[in-house]
Each structure stands twice: as structure tokens, then as C-alpha cells.
Amino acid sequence: MAEITAALVKELREKSGAGMMDCERALTETGGDLEAAVDWLRKKGLAAAAKKSGRL
Image 1 (tube, rainbow, N blue to C red):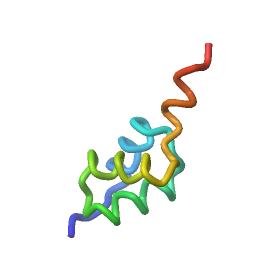
Image 2 (spheres, rainbow, N blue to C red):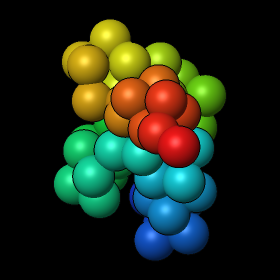
Image 3 (cartoon, rainbow, N blue to C red):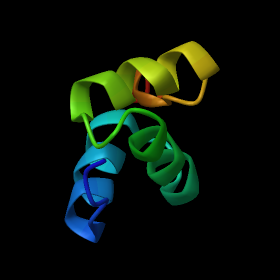
């Protein structure tokens, strides 16, 4: 299992817009795989990127 670093959590937060703890949980569940973690967050409905993209 890959070590989950603060930098990895930060990168996932920037990509997904999800909270820190949600990102950490997603990375833990996916073994540190960033792309799989984004998919995991989407499936859980936590990725806020789509919601934020509509703001002006």
C-alpha cells in the first residue's frame, strides 16, 4: 500500500474539490492511485468540481 502524503491529498483536493478527509479516505481506499481516487469520489458523490464549474 502506498503512503498517503499531504502533497498527494492536496493534489486530489485541487482536482476534485472534495474535502481533505474525503480525499484522504479516497486515496487510502484506492491504494494511493490518484485517478482511481477521483473516480471513487465521483461514485460517492463527493467531487464538487462539476458543481463549481458552473459558477461565474
